[in-house]
Structures are given as C-alpha cells and as structure tokens.
Length: 96
Image (tube, rainbow, N blue to C red; front, side, top):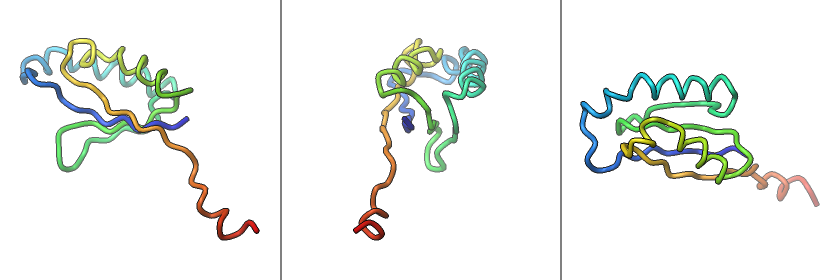
C-alpha cells in the first residue's frame, strides 16, 4: 500500500536539537529508501517539512517504521499518514 507521510514539527524543537540528530536521521532515511520502504521523499515548498511516499503493508506498519526515525524517537517531529488506493474513476467511463 502506498502511504503519504506528512511531517509536522512538534513544539519545543530547537535548531540545536534538530542538528544534534540530523546525521542519524539522514542515515535512517537512506536505509529505508534503500530497502524500498521510502519510495519518494520531498520537502514542501511552503514549509521546512518533509513529505514521504512509503510502500508498506498498512498504516500501522508505516507508523512503526517512522517511529524508528531519530527525530521521531526524540519527540521533535511526527507524521500525518494518508493511505492511498488506486483511482477507480476510469472504470465509470469505460466499463459498462
């Protein structure tokens, strides 16, 4: 299942706290990308927050995987998860 994960910073995070864990965060994200769990990753153009496209069995699996990110473990960020499904609209046009 494809899942969009929208990062949200939590209150109390300072630049110093983010910098303290940034290398470990990048390493973990890279590992998940290499495993095929994180399929795509972006930063929002309007905010300094990440948008990830995950491939997981379900939302619960995505939550467990994202919980392994150092910035999540240290209470600096959280993610809003949006499960996706295939678009069924074309069937209305072509299937009678």
